[in-house]
Amino acid sequence: MDTLEVHATDLEIVDALQISPRATWASVGRAIGVSEVTVARRWKSLESRRLAWIGVALHPAVSYGSFIEIRCEGKKMDAIATSLGKHPDVITVGYTTGDYNLYCLTIATSLDGVLRCVHGGLPELFDANQIRISLYRQMTGGVDWRQGILSASDERQLHGDSKSKSQDSPPVLTERDRDLFLLLGRDGRSSPTELARELGVSPGAVARRLEQLQAGNQIVFRCDVARPDFDLPLNMILLMKAPPLHAERTSLLIGHWRETRFCASVVGSANIILIVGLHDLVDAEGILRRLSLEHPDVEVADQRVATRMTKVYGRLLDEFGRSKGIVPVDPWFRSLKG
Image (cartoon, rainbow, N blue to C red):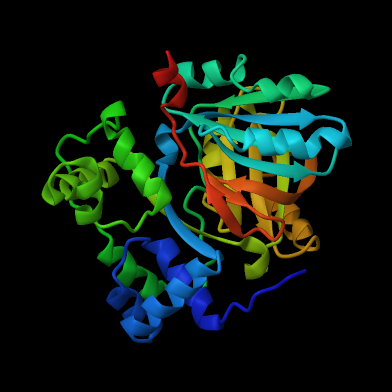
């Protein structure tokens, strides 16, 4: 594999930015014990080498969507995966082992948007031999995952840097925020001044709106990486059965695991879907053991490995997991099409 060196300092910088993606370079430098010049220089290098990036996401609590499993002929896999990646409401696409050889995640701000997507909105699925669709009304974890390298004190310092003021009446993300959301999807560290220039409003108005949306749990910022270069080459997908009345709470608890990349309670015979990041196949045993110890009433109905990702939350990835382009996530895409 064509590998690029990721320095220990790079790992710390990324972990700091996964805690607080819009933190100042000075704050990151204080947390990890290097100068802000060093932080800025190393982050610029990570970005230019397509190893790390920062974007925006819907807050898990307001993320409607679907988990779609796809079984198709081997010769059609690449074409279907590539085509799915072009849809702005298909946030993630991956290849898997098992009975279904592809999967994707879709997102919307409403159930209507999800249904418009799954009922004819993805024409490439007509080339599949079989599909299975599971709907969710919120993600319960994995949107703003992190490596967990920094100490608790460093983490508290960065959380303090990103703390938003509370709002008396939390705002609701609307279609009026769409242009702002799409710009942040391209670069989650864009300043209010840069965003205001594109939107034709004042920097103060942009700064206030960002603060409102974060404080109101409408959006979150996320720092992601070329996972194979960060020793996270695999994902494991688990379809689980929990007692129906406990599924939502169980998925919330599992969603907080550091390894979680996606988790949701869904409607189906398997009512929790969990995706976790793995350093190696041997790590799967530890995940399964933890599940059995912490949630003995949960049955693993199916498990498979995601061997390659072609899109992760809007970022198109090459064969090494590095960014090669972006289709900004647009959760209003179906509703605006009418």
